[in-house]
Image: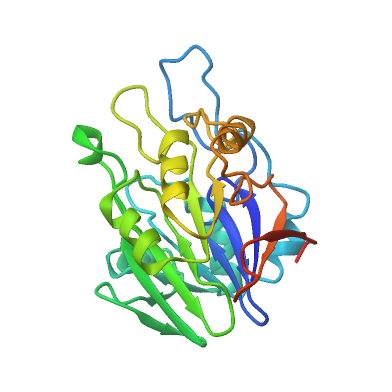
Length: 271
């Protein structure tokens, strides 16, 4: 299994004959309004372009997977991503709550089972609840779902989605024991209210609980995500987690193995 980090939460998970595009935010730099207005450094989003590798990687995509998209969550499905999926008629895996919204956009939806696993290829996809912020800010958000993906002969994979650290997230990592977990680490927050996704301490706490490898993203692409890759990796080294926690640059591909030799990741080429 290869995973390519494109930008923010947008990744491509590659199996031998299947390429899953997760949460496509494909807009040009600066196409989306700021998420923070009161700081002195207001910037339009995304704050970086897609990497040079993106067109070649996107050409391989066979499916899409959406964690959440309603109520203005354009950092997980923006207009450019909608158009790209619609024009190519890519099958879009989603939760039932998002199905009607995505169908109205003209996308080819394939709703997943909200209560348990859905058969997919040589395995299954199981939803894991997200908590996209706590307190009053959380009541304004669409919380969405992460996904636990199993495929025969491949590493098990947990895509956490936009979530703070919760008991559901902890249980997924400690009881299901995914070989690889893709987790948001940007510490996103608006001008007011609590954090919307995991920050550096929460990601490190989760990595310490788990036994697998951790692929941290949702950093350095949006104006309301303060955590940097360098800061996260330095903290991981200080806590003895450097061999299990990665924060790949946009455009980078990591290859993961199943079985006894799975405790490692190797750089891969563009898909």
